[in-house]
Image (cartoon, rainbow over all chains, first blue to last red):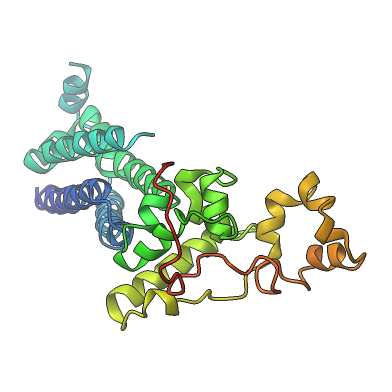
Length: 77
Length: 209
């Protein structure tokens, strides 16, 4: 249960970083100034990169748990 | 991909990522895991690459280069009503694409040329925001203009290969091609932008794009 909580927390942080990074990127695309490219790559890219890395880390740091019969049944639905 | 399509994709990705942030428990199921992989890995990276590609393409545009205040005079020099002005003659007669006029001449037609041109652009940004800006007429090229950039279009062209001045001396054409005789700084085509030296006699053509 504790492991699931930490996984959820990492997913949340990862998602928030990705969302902020995506919003920065969207703003840079509609902001037609030369500095926009630097902000897009430096800030947007860094936030998205961090979010993606945290997501990948949350996957590999999660201990393997075989799927229970109820999980399998839920997936079938 | 058009800018508006990328922005829509980004907002769509952000909304889906918001679903995972609001309800991370949905990743317990297989479909939730696929959703999380899509919105926290694939879509953000795809959006980032698409956005960077879009910005790279936009950075080639004349409007992008002229969006810096310091480049105003250089933009104006494209409209000088005098065919001896090299940049103006190329721009007004569409010898270079009017919407990519700066990039076409100032890129580097060698391996990684576009990348080097963008690095040069980053140096411009550094000077623009963090250093004392020079006067427009004091702006100099990072390195002498290489004939390769001219020859990218002119090599093999009849006007270049058979031009009377180019063939007046048999050594001239090989020297130009070997970049030992500069097109723009040997006294032949040396009036390029001439910013700061226009005086009152220069007129401007208000047509074109």
